[in-house]
Figure (tube, rainbow, N blue to C red):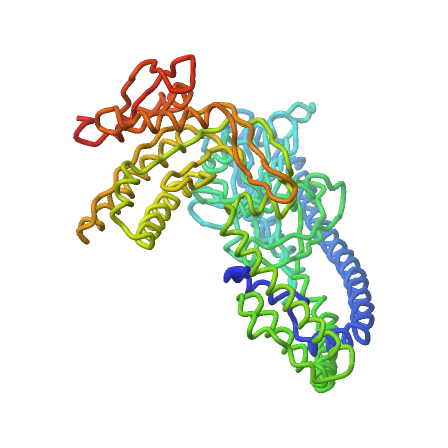
Length: 622
């Protein structure tokens, strides 16, 4: 008997409760009974508390984001009002109509006063109808043609303009452009007033919402983070941008960078896209992989979104610590229970260990060491006595099974024991191999009976080993002859090639056996092999008291006749019938001779016979 426990599966199986020591099982049972309900209730309460805390914190973040977005809206609104006041002033209207040096001085003086009063304003310009700068707080801009600028195109078309938060290529600082149309006295658009605000004015509002645990950042309408305290996230998009949009941003040098990488925050981007007001989202940070919660709110006067985030464990940690402490206490109590169970289990573990050792001895087939000493009078003692009786029965059945396996083949034995074979037969297509030793009668006359038996045992052992890998069923030993069936009792594919391959291996093993015999000055053996394929009846033949599994049919007789014919064929090839040849004719690695139709003793019709001389060697292939 072999050990059915695989080395690969044994370590894994020990993790299952069924493999635990009984003391551990008792301890675990006590822990589960006493502490598990408490732990479950605590965990449920923890989850409920975490949900409530998270909802409250999400609401706070939403409100803070909405407040911040409102302050940005107020800043933009105030700036627009200031620009509109400037655009509607008489000095500006006159200079776009008829620019003169006196008017330019008055406008530039007004610009200076506005910039002094508003520290967030960086630049003021007035463009005429053609897009030329007629007045500017920076005199070097006067005379420049800015008709290609987006703020001019929008302003001259009569629309207010608000730019992206752009980064200057020279200064490296962000800025925000606003534009408003300048109308003449009769209401016609005569020019454009432009104001550039420092980007810090917007980012300062966002940064005011930051804290040690909260991060505030700004996202533009394209999904690009345009302000963030961590430069690893700055000027990164939430999701990959479309190629054409990415090219446009890079070409415009909007942020002064050559590429916009994605953070892969698809859910974040989708929630922003679907939201109609302040909302929140839970996501996993692309930088540290931690779960975060963010409240966000849109800026009404721009396509920006203000987001304020914090790690979830910031507000969840206190509750988690409480639950963790409770679990630690439960573990300590559980260990105490296990120690008690260990002490209690020692009273009956010894007989169980003896049973285990005996069972392992049975598994190894060592029945002599499988007896159990019954030391108690309780249920475990009764179990030990029953186990000993079972071992005695198993030992006897194994002995009978071993003897039975030597009388019939293992294949037939297993089918008989499983009840798959009964008296009678079934039609099967099989290949039958018949082999016989040449001149065995003459050879045995010169040998003692003991030597004859030894010779036959050596020979038949080699032949049996040759056919086993090919799925051959050794049906019978008839003196020095051997009958092998391919396709019964188990069905197989390519039975013809299995039979021929087994025959070639038989000849190879016979050559090796002959070399050993000649080394001992014994005469070599010569055999003939015939193979026939056809329909037979396979099954139990005999009576209810004694029967034999065999095959009966013309294919068996033809195989025996072909084996006899090998005596008359030069080179002693393996002779096969036409049905066998049809099953191997596709193989180009065999040396096969067509011997034509030949008369076979006991048959009226001739048999088309082929001779298999062996395998094609490398030299022959060339």
